[in-house]
Length: 280
Image (cartoon, rainbow, N blue to C red; front, side):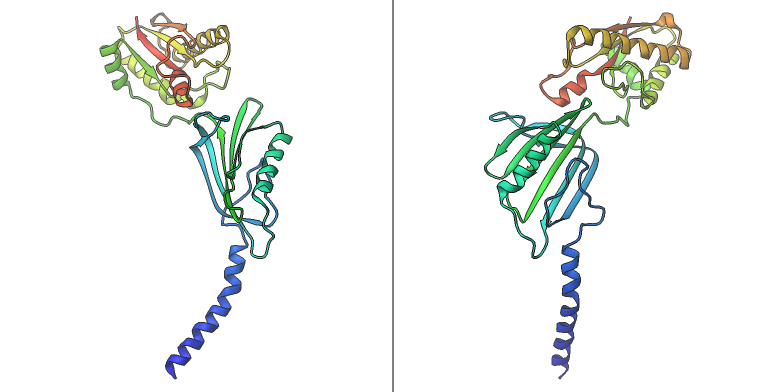
């Protein structure tokens, strides 16, 4: 009797839980939301949602080309078909997103018959890359990266800068930020510039060239002028905010002419966009 009683309780509990489980499967995961660029296909809920301030994903930039890593704010949004909802075809899912992207000025980079599409939107100087991965239409995923540089939180300290200046005669400074095509030092650069000031304060006999570098995107003459203006902006901050004597600093710009990495990758371009100190 006890066994039969227990089995009855289990069956009752299962009956009570089944509607709740169905409702859970037909609701978005906590925190899940559509990306601002796209609405969702009818009949789907978000089963998985991740958003990172800085991440990376591999995208196909064109037919027959090797995948590239695109870095920036990234999203992974996995959609699952609701119970009882009509399931679209694979091509229907892909074409919906391809057409939506083209409607807002984007382009279809690659449309694969195996169930994936790669899209790109450039608007107001910002790039957004999208992969629609719909190999199974009952559950498929959007990978989206809003391309951008990482905010550098860790900068070399004055002691490390001094060691490199002494041993190599120059040192690259990362963590100095400018808006695209601009030469105004952003406030996020304070930590890096403060370490330069500490280096110069601790070594009063040291004078340096402050050299601006760019990647190879854009015309050479524009990049030469931009790198010069950025170097001058850094010098200005050191003189006005940290009271470093202007006679100890000489600004120069070499644009893309002295890369430290290949400009064929986004990571290489990021390394080439830098300020260097060169011992006079």
